[in-house]
Image 1 (cartoon, rainbow, N blue to C red):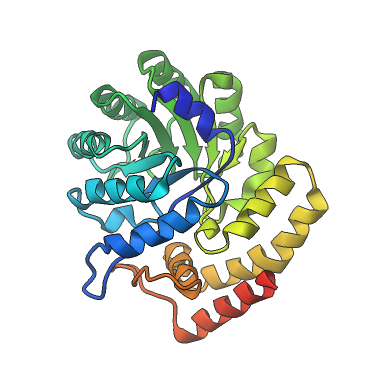
Image 2 (image 1 turned 90 degrees about the horizontal axis):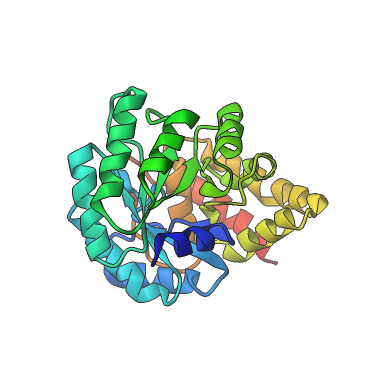
Length: 301
């Protein structure tokens, strides 16, 4: 997909990151993954992100990513597929090229590995990945990779295929500076864990969309919340936050890593076979799975 067309698509609706399905031995399970992605593509997601954060990008080998992208492309029909990408610059370039060859419509560049870096280094890192592919690239501001507004502007000037800025850091002052500085040059994506909790604030800051993790297992509810948000139906949004998202937050916060593990448990409870999470994450306990099952049932009635 042409980067500018992808940019328009990304800003037009809700986004999500399918979990990556594993079998009992912990290997990628393409059949289970395809069935889940096919189900999700029947709902109103503007694009799906294969091998993203909720897809356990951090636990995948670089060689697994193209296979996951190809499987997602085959299962998703007309829904665009964005591939996760990251680590050090040379590895990120290799992953980006392989994902493009596998049919990815775009790249989400996740934070580099381990160390912090100065703005000059982040500029060189992002530019190298953009230069390596012809498809659209989105940068993800989070953790040790925080690109400042002036650096982002330089990157936009140098990289025509840099089309998106995703924020998972929650620094609203920087977020607003970015949207004011860059205007419509980029599409802006909310990327906080359980993004619906922050969606209203990000919408006010100029972000038209966000990636919904819970879309993985309650896509109907995720779409309903997004539509209510965009239509300004604040009371409806608050009711959904109270009935589902705050109770879900209580489960998610019971252990580190549950932002992914709880999503995978939810997918399993909806009748799919995503397998467990890979170490160093751990799955929900039986008690916590029961809590999530009750919550899903309460909003599915």
